Image (tube, rainbow, N blue to C red; front, top):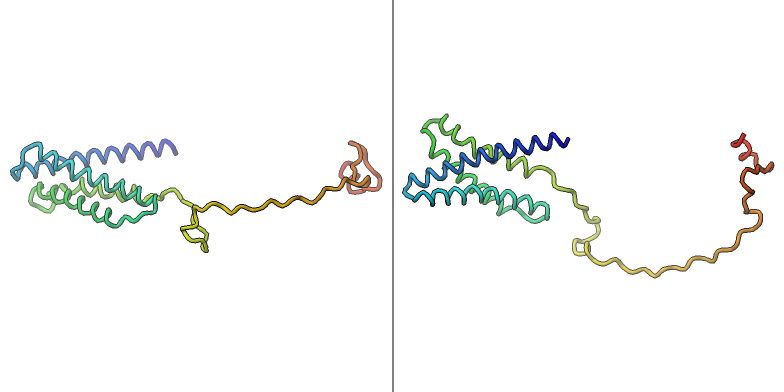
Length: 177
């Protein structure tokens, strides 16, 4: 199980790095091709691609905390589509050129979907009749009840010495024999 998790992580990192490198390059090249200086091309690539990664992580954190993810999800889709558009714009103008250029963004989106759809750690659910506001209230203090007085055992309740079988207890004799 541990080896499998390590292999999965290596595959995830390899795909992420390669998809990121291709996506960064496409966004950079498109920016430079449309008149921006080289450093702005890299700045745009960093902004678009890392924003998509950050938003994916933010969605995961919000899900763990039970917070809404709607607006963050919309932003994730928007930045992913922006990356995809840059990749397709840099492609050879043919169906296969567009498909091949779209692979990095589609691979990234698939990885985000797989990682974000994994089940978060289960948190205890509230009692059905208990409101959320009561979850963290201090428990009520209960007055301790004094125990009933203990009476000393009667001589009949005293056990016989060890290894002594009483003839009037056949169930014990049957077990020992």
